[in-house]
Image (cartoon, rainbow, N blue to C red):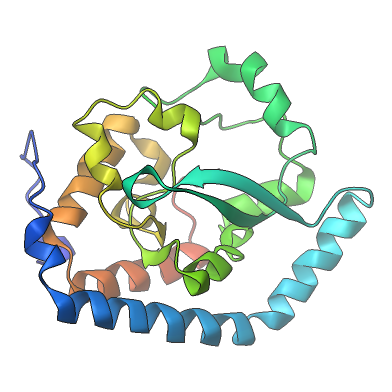
Length: 224
């Protein structure tokens, strides 16, 4: 199924994961592509990495360049996710004081003008370049290039059994939600798009999402 043919009137989606588990060719090619693409991208983007590292250090000399955070992957398996630091060092501790300002309904936290984000961080988030180190997670194997957004443990703690269906596959650096509506919808909208992707995922759909994501780097779509 292509992006232009996705049905917009589906209310509830229930995933039969067995149909894709048996598709060995899809899983093999997807993993092979993840490995080749992540290695190639890491090599090609080395100059970009160096520029961002220098910019982060100039902006926040005492802060670590990389931000490592525990996220939950397939079947709620915890792993360390890598990003470029776009927030102040005590951002996680500040979260409890900012929860009342959450602008997204449901089990996800987002603030458009998040006070924890640094000056260089606003630019990186707008163009999604803070997420480039996730390519290391793709190479390791706890993420894929395409898949649902990686959730925090505190977010998954609020999930219903229905919502936990989005954890039936590996999370991705990008996905149907990230490449289309992004922060213009709440958690329920993101969940619906994730489940549509999981139910219809294919190599061609993955390719379409990657192409749309490359466009987002140049023309941001509500990223913050």
